[in-house]
Length: 170
Image (cartoon, rainbow, N blue to C red; front, side, top):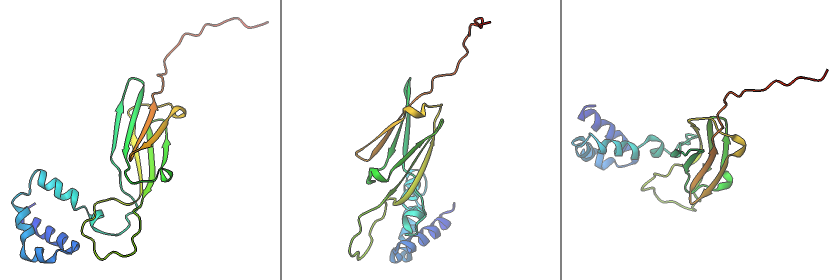
């Protein structure tokens, strides 16, 4: 993306955010235009996502997930800070886990202005594929300090066994 194109995009984003004076002076385009590669770009795009800028209910956001494996189990950790455990739903299939819920902030009587909006709100649904089959009857989960921990025992491998044939009654 050229620097001029980047400046135009940043100008439009600044207008959406209400920072029209900075956009008119061109400070945003020049400041970021020189450092438009690497970490600065990733940080800019992460912090200025359209879902965060607009107050339109998109219906979904995705919480971050980590999946670990031991010899006998899979461990799925979901970052769900600020969510009431009663609004969470966990569904386990043979090879996937689905976590659903809703994050809400407390309502304030009056808000004069918004200076920063970064917390994702509303309903979410996250399906996590698992690297192997699990025993769905033995799955368990706990929710502590904003982290949902799901423990999924691995399904024992199906193998071949030799079955002896015994004579039946006559």
